Amino acid sequence: MNPHRYCVVMCGGVGTRFWPFSRSGMPKQFLDFFGTGRSLLQMTVDRIRPLVDPSRIILVTNSAYASIIREQLPDIKESNILLEPARRNTAPCLCWAARHIQALDSEASIVALPSDHLILKEDVFRQTLEDGFDFVEKGDRLLTLGLNPTAPATGYGYIQRGVAVENFPGICKVKSFTEKPNLEMAKVFISTGEFFWNAGIFLWRADSILRAFDRYDRETAAVFDAGVGVYGTPGEMNFINTSFPNTPSISIDYSIMEKADNVYVKTADLGWSDLGSWKALYDASPHNADGNVSQNCKVLTYDCRDTIFAVGDDKIVVASGLDNYIVAENGNALMIYPIEEEQRIRNIVNDVRARFGEDYV
Image (cartoon, rainbow, N blue to C red):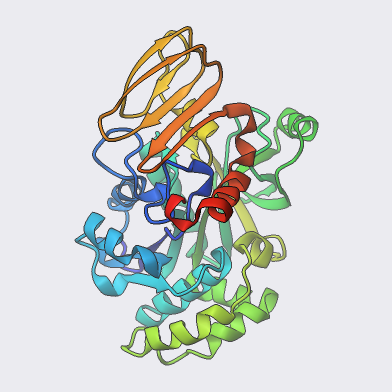
């Protein structure tokens, strides 16, 4: 196991699109969606352990979730849990993590993973990361994973591959990034064979990504540059608590990946889903003969089709006449809503918060 390889797990999201199953106090990455006894976060860490020692797994999350992470991952040392005092998207998260890791190991290379994805082909996943580490460690390169599309999905960003890199099978220069196209454009993308889903999984050396921040996102870089000398010391969190809220809220894609000229894509088929919505969870789950999905609950249905049920506390659900619906309950909130309108759930959560208060979100 290479002692200079690190993993950053991004686990500070609120999972609004999975309300009410996912709540602000217990977002989806901390939930056991598949009845395995492991949350999505735990599954993510389990998946990377054969490649990266737990002593080099860094978790970046919101300070509100510190106790949940310590409970779910007790063998991750406390100094490896970086607690953000404010929500600022992925660029500040990854810039801080790179600064922190570089202070510990000047030769570090990093894989950055979302905490809430499903990957079925774990052996392929690990080999893909091995190949990716080998690639970025040999030069000043930023690598992202592009996953083989199985349908013209409109909910994912796309990466267009360009010229292949000699001696690194499956790795190409990135030609373009496209955010969530419409259906017709997605169909065109699929037909060309040049476009892949953007998984939000990245590999780079610590010095490479910090160099990219200095060049392409000075606003973010400047905040963390001011802390050089405190990373990896007892003064780090005092500096972060004061400075982190001053960073812009921007994704790593907009901040760096769409601007840099040393960006590459490694294409792969990982059996992947980002589990970004109820529809994505429905698609990734076992269906019965009527197309219904039961997530860890007892369900008795009459004339129901293509509906997902996610109800806790050992309740029994009896339903009739539902077609293509979400039935989800958690604590003091129950939602019965058409799957095809799930893009409105973020707005629903805002409406619930405005009318009934934070206790319901």
